[in-house]
Image (cartoon, helix red, strand yellow):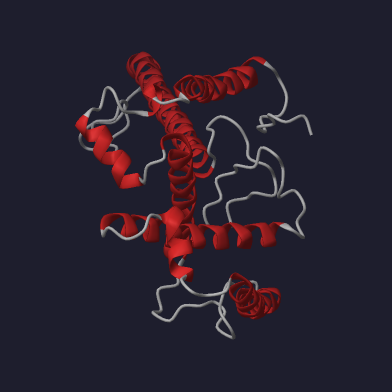
Length: 277
């Protein structure tokens, strides 16, 4: 290692540093120091840049993936542990930790009923059976309405009481001793998320089907056929509630931008609070 180093000969003998090698040694030391400093500073900049980029990407992924409105913070009680939790609770209905599990169970039950309802509506409409607003009366037939209500109260009361007892004991949805109810063994976090998403979509679909009948008096497939035949003339904007729909779309488009801009301008917490309380 000493061969070729300033101040040593090829034979390893020391030269006279006082006369010849001192300026060269100082010059080489300065070059080494500057090279090390440049290398360390470059690595430091790279590390800092890497940390900053990693932090920004991680923050964006968490914000966009777990919260319905990126740029704001979800309520503290919605921490992403529940299936389908995207921090959406503008009315703060889930602020009570004791009632939050029951609200989650209520959403699941309504979503399951809506999935059955939308499937039944489309089935009867596709196969020419009585329309969904007529199917109940047609199914009763010669049955007495009082008898039907009495049977409904007894059967549904028993099933609901069993479901509530099982839910209070296990915290899971089920049917008569099976909590959770999973006869095919498909229970997993991924399937629970899919169930919540499909349930929410079905609830919105059922609301749309009911609204369509209230506005146009047609079934889903009848409305679809009429729209496909004349897309420009038969749609939600040309119906009797077209103006209301335009106003709703404008509000839904502007409101998120307003809330995000408001959080960017004002200082303080980033939690989304459209309702003062």
